[in-house]
Image 1 (cartoon, helix red, strand yellow):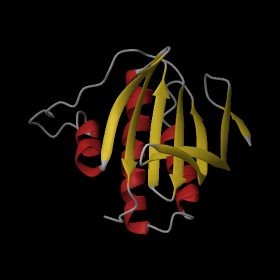
Image 2: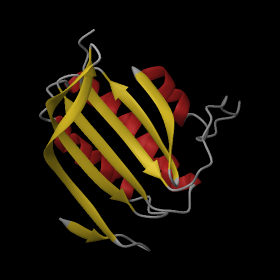
Image 3: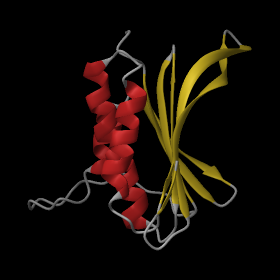
Length: 159
């Protein structure tokens, strides 16, 4: 399904099956995975609830409802950061596999975000990456050709 995003080009929304290479015991093998790719329009805050809804659909197959709420919250934070702190489109990718959930938001700005102590007042800014850092099983920032990807993993609650 394609939609026109405000101020941007078509937004592709969809989930599909994929084979993902997974490194276990230094031997790469392919695992079945469900994947979501969602293009985020530049400066379009409507993308946040749209991304949550698309992720919720993908996660119904995951079977970990207690982790799905965390996944939605953390995805909202990454999507919001990409929309607010860049002046470009971004791409949300979420992959569910037997090993868990991997979510990343890729943008086209090289400036790396940093977790920071939020202001002492009741400001609503400055807490996103701290939430990701405290609730995700793993997270990070990966540079790519033009920009970066901010990602997190949830292990599915199997630990």
